[in-house]
Every structure is written in structure tokens, then in C-alpha cells.
Image (cartoon, rainbow, N blue to C red):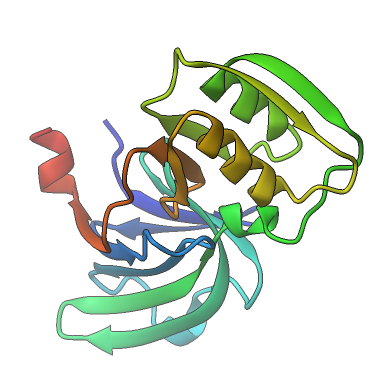
Amino acid sequence: MNDDITIRWNNKILKGFNSAAFGVSLDSIAGYFSFEIVDEAILPLQKISLPSHSEKIEIYIGETSMLSAYVEKITPVMVSEGRKITISGRSVTSDLIGCHLPAAMKRSGPALNVANELLKPFPLIRVEGEASSEKVDLSASLGAEYWDTLEKLGRKIGRLVWSTGDGVIRMGASTPKKSRITISKSNILSG
């Protein structure tokens, strides 16, 4: 099984990393994150291609997408373990802020279905949560902001809405605080 950590952007791949740690500010609408990857040096840092500021990246473990985001800062350094690259930026969910519906919308059905129907123009973003079977009627006018419309939907069923920073928007009773997750081959394999 290939469970290497890879970064993909603009038809390029940076791979070979075997451990990573990232923290996401879960109470931030935009889902700001910091991601650090370390491995044995395969090439000197000057010889590797890295994503640029504002480029959209996908971070994978094997073939599983862990994060879809925009780069704001990238810092490569050599350390005793090899090369370490720290990337910080914002989740693709920030695309919903300041972006407005191009047409009026009226939908009925389970809340999560309605939310995901609303976000069809954003294929990298999905909505998950506790509200999967709760029925809701949602109407939004032309020009309504996507994020405001999601919050309106959440209020209709008594749920809060927040970004997890990995292209997922959650609907739930309360938002979690800042989390830090460590990912490595060993804990993926042990499950």
C-alpha cells in the first residue's frame, strides 16, 4: 500500500515525505492552517520545486486527500532529520466568503443534501454533520453570499456552521476549539 504524503499542485507532485503534523484553527471561517512535513533529504532544497504564494494545493496520504488549500507562506529548511517544509495558508472553504449566488435558489429536503446542492459550484468543498436527516426549506435570493446562506441553513435546524480547514464544512451543535493532528505512516497503518 502506498501511503506516502504528497503535495500536488498545477500538475506537479512533491513526494517522499513520511511524517506530517498540521494544526487548523477550527473557529476560523476561512480555515487557516499550518502544515509541516519532514523526510530524509532526497534532493537539496534549492533543487526541488515548491508551490508559490496563492497557488491551490492538495495534500494527500496515499490517494486520500487530506487538505485542499491556498498557500500563503512556504518555508523550506534543512534539519538533522532531512528536509522540513512548513506551509501555511487558508482552506478552499474561504472561497465561500464574499462569493455571491448567481441566481435565486429554493430547495427542500434533508439539510445536508440542501447544503451540498448549494455548494455544487465548489467541487472541492463538502458539508458534513449531525443534521443529515433533518428536513429544511431554504430560499436564497440572487446575490446572497454563499457563507451567509449556509449559516442561515444551519440556524433553521439549530446548528452552527464552521470550516475544518480541509475542504469540509461542518454543521453541529458546537464548534470545536483549535486542534492539532499528527499524521505519519505508522499511525495510518495501525489505523
